[in-house]
Amino acid sequence: MKWTIAMTQEELKRKTIIDQAIEKRITQKEGAEKLRISERHFRRVLRDFRNQGDVGLVSGHRGKPSNNRMKEARRAKIVEFIRDPIYEGFGPTLLNEKLAQSKGIHISPESLRQIMIEEQKHIPKMKKRRSHIFLATVARDAENWFKSMAPTMPGWKSVDPKPVCSCLWMMPPVRFWPQNLWITKVFTLMANSVCPIFDRLGCRLPSTATNSAFFASIHTQVPIKRPSRNSPAL
Image (tube, rainbow, N blue to C red; front, side, top):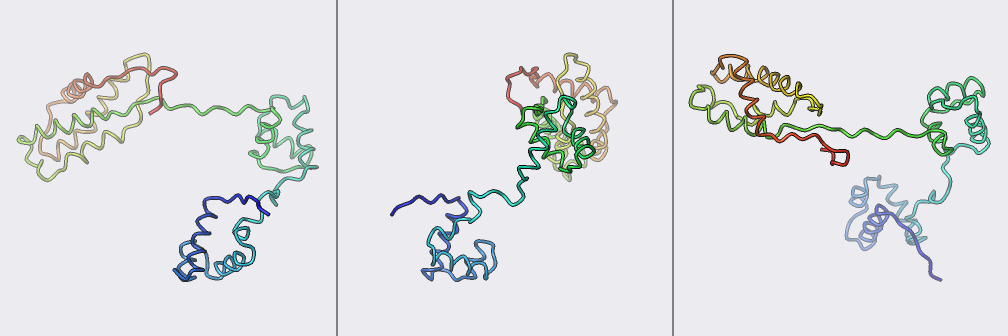
């Protein structure tokens, strides 16, 4: 008689190691280490495999209801409470409090939310897609600019330009807005944050306005487009 045995990837890996242990290619200790189980449990698995074959490697809980599953009678009371028109429009958290007060049934808000979704009494919110850009071109161009300024910076030889320019990646994400006011604020902030680095290198720029003008000139090389609704998120 032939039948089909459904096995997971982890169970197939376990069968391979058990076969190696039976063929004496590895010891039981090595097999237990590969499966990340104790030697006693490995011997138990080996015994089940010898007695039952491949079926002994399949979990005995497969196809059976979970032990932590909610009882049908209790679930029916919760569903009846959810369908009450008085609580129409209540969210999972508030409805969970009313459920505990009225029926004395205590469950987690997440469990109640899942039941509400199954009963079509709650619509889960879609996660908002982040809409921003990282100023990678700015960091790369700033590194090249630092290298070009090396002859005028006495402390340049003791400083690696890549960690210096990596500070540009620590900035919060720049969000897209219809106005261009945020562009001036962002590059002014970048200029002010880089000033202590110039002091360490032994080169002080004349003013903050010069720094802002430098980063503003780099900004002209960065193509910034407002994303459409269907554009992929970065």
